Length: 216
Image (cartoon, rainbow, N blue to C red; front, side, top):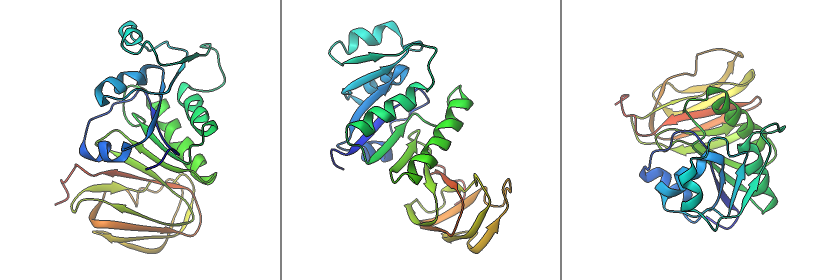
């Protein structure tokens, strides 16, 4: 980790797992609106707190009186999370951890976080989305490896047609596979340990459940 790693605290669910604690390591933190509640659970103090504050409990203000707040109107052209990411990039972020980006009551926000992560990856940023129990990493043309426990579940939904998709060290491997847009062929696979993903063209995301060992 370095000073170019930022964790964005978002409003979704967040479980304090060992993988989460390792991921955020020596990260810097920015909170988006009600995502500040995770700062209490993590025992961290963000350097900035942004949003329209429509989902911020009153007691959070008194818990973090010295954190600079940057308020925005409710009628704005971007989500609080997107604003927080922009602030992190302006401060030198190259790796972005979107904590609380998955699950929760707002599926529209969770979907937008996934789409934004793919866009950020296309711009050259290293992105991880996490709820603590579930993780997501963008997959673009090239190769990535995820260190997953043997027997844990993962899926690779495509956000476009995928060509040349290969998945190694999994129960259901693929080699140079063509995945039509909307296909469920790559949903519910099982890791055999560190999994290697390669793609020739397209946009996808790897959704992993490292604590779900139901595939053992």
